[in-house]
View (cartoon, rainbow, N blue to C red):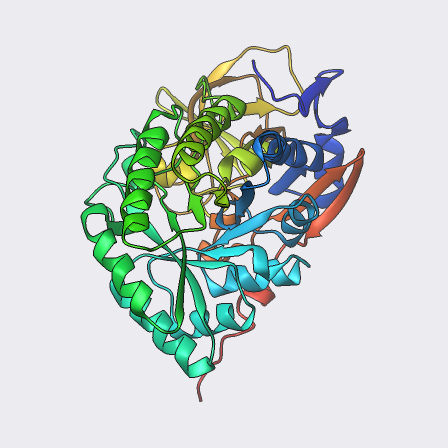
Length: 430
């Protein structure tokens, strides 16, 4: 049984940085998201520290945390104080970054459907860059910037048609995906952008997918970005940054993702050799958009067994967490390790871990061998990314509370939602 170094057993009780999970459940109830601040900062520094090693007078870097993976204000504030920039995909996420006390000038705005109001909001807060995903979006940004008397900094999210070899729902760099501007059309798009009076062309971007275990597709995509950078330079369009996106995977079960240090070393090795050969003295920044690899294994979902049930030869552990709390298994058929909070020495059985929602798709784990009884606590591991961020109120279920462990102290960073809060915005007509 494998656990991350911040999630370990003491006296047969699972702890987060030494804080027993059964005590947290008793104090805060379940379902409950629990995060380790130490794990979160450690994962961010795996990026930031290596980037610093490769920085020179004319090679810079910015690690932009992907807000969509976990957008709690406390998480954003911690990473902002660590020096992170932020990759956002909505105006709401921008307001979260600002509410967390972080610098809007270190924000890059991705996403295929930016509304006029979101573009205005971003320009008002002087974000670092828009990652443009269509020509229609480029023209809208230019028009709105003109109305506001501003100049918008833009990068094109180029779709390099590189297969990331990941789940099709989280593959974003192929021709059939909705994201980005086709590689073959990007040059003409940049030329159009360079002629626009209220657009400042600053960089080039791509993001080919998520939960990548091998960095070969990312290096292939980088080669395409470099080639396009060179073509643009020949036309007098000088870019200031290259954004390779995010996507490095984590271990949910037995996966062995590429080491972040190895991945970044190969990226910077390629960039340094290329830049020194072709653009000596020109300043270039490298940008990264990690999310899951920072927050994913920094958190878990704590849940309590309500009933044990057998249908013919099938055993079910019905828990108080559900697909509205953790969507990934229902949506992607994804694996999350399930650990008992308190180990028992009794007979084991094979269970499907299911929730109370009225959907057959409401399951958190299948075919898990456990020794459990009613009222026992289970920890759904690797739930720090795309857990709470994707949760909903289906079946009028309040979303879970969130706890952050820092130096063996527990902090409530989001209160549990109450049913009356869920319908407070609704009105009965007479």
